[in-house]
Length: 281
Image (cartoon, rainbow, N blue to C red; front, side, top):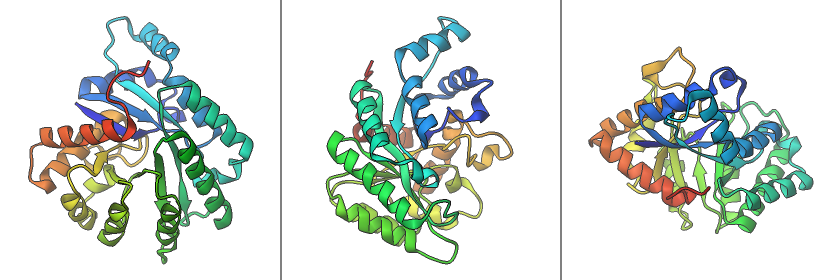
């Protein structure tokens, strides 16, 4: 069994068949998933989708004997929408976090200097607000970090902000950077972790696979980022949590272990890091 630590089941791609996607995920061996919010509407949906009422709704569609993964959620604003990150919104996020034990991570938030959909200072302000919320609630943060094509400025700014919040634990979502950046993140004493998704399976990602091969056994997890970044084995299809198995297989290959060992390692790290050792209903 595997844990998909980052997916977006509230996206329109899943509107017609989310119940089947959940069932297929469980049948493929996904025991738990983190359904990540990245804007106001998505965060509201993430809250709703990990409450008992939603599970009953899905069971009503599939039948009482349906096999489903445990669903967890987040509250956060992606850097593309960082203009939404007001104090009022962050206050609402805190209320949701306090009221729903299945909200186990803050984000997805971070910096995206590739598209620069929002000004740099607005992205930095949004990221800091999320980090403050993490300090106040004790939850970890799901971090998006993407540099411009000809610059390393985003990762430099990210390392600076991580240093400003030395007690906040972060998962570096969809890690695609180099060994130097991985080493800098992992060297921070709070215990950040790296998350590998479909990109690590692509033929062009040899350098990333080398990074993944050497990450300490308790410092990495797996994800899909579905419906995006489909693993190579399923390219051309909509990505979904069931496909996290393909990423785990590639990590097993590059680390020279059986896929069951990747399951054991990543599940243990995810359960400890996100506090999802049991059912939080």
